[in-house]
Image (cartoon, rainbow, N blue to C red):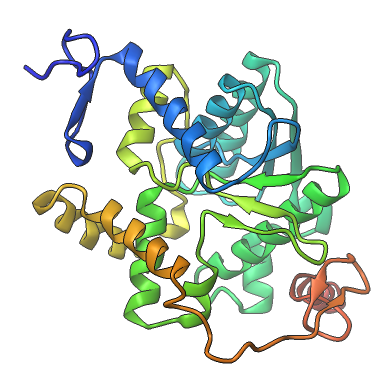
Length: 310
């Protein structure tokens, strides 16, 4: 029987990667304590800053919001209704659980319905622009980045926080390393600084395993959507996660070591460009967000293209 490292009673969670087991009470203390440590270590934000948490109805984003509130930060949520439906009406269920979470805790939640806002759901946009090539993932990512930044900017938030966990970060890092995507390797970080009208983006859960957050949500009584996005089936990111899980089973802590050593190498300048390349940016003539294009940003060009075809 595994015993809690702090009090000696039967442990509820065994973390092989940390060689540590904790009971429910101490685990629910440990996760926020570690989150606070990461926030300070990577200088993500300060106490007086307003935080906007991107929430999807999943375990990671709802747990992040819960943790930040427990730590006493000023954190509101934003939910994007994407119009993605599978066998469980994915978008409907995820929005319901997000609203329920906010109401139970008397938290402020901003809801943006992409279809109501722009007249098209994400699958519809992907089909009409052919950007999805069978899956609307690229359109979804573009829309989410645009809308989250818009809400953060328009409503005066200092920072946008997302629930990316270690499994997410390690999978992205693995894929970018396999193809040696230098630009993406340079940009991957727990903190992406604000610039030219773009909100600062932070990932306070970047050093927690996915199972750590699942355990936190369960022990905290957070009800979340268990199903993955129906369009994620067969994606390369899930394939990379499965490969890394096989490595982790043989070598507990491998994913964390992989990610942390990357951050150390990045900080030492390993992924720096030999010659700095600067790209001229302009403000989108329609939404005001920065873009390298001379007139409209990618999102506004997409919306305009679909509007002209209707």
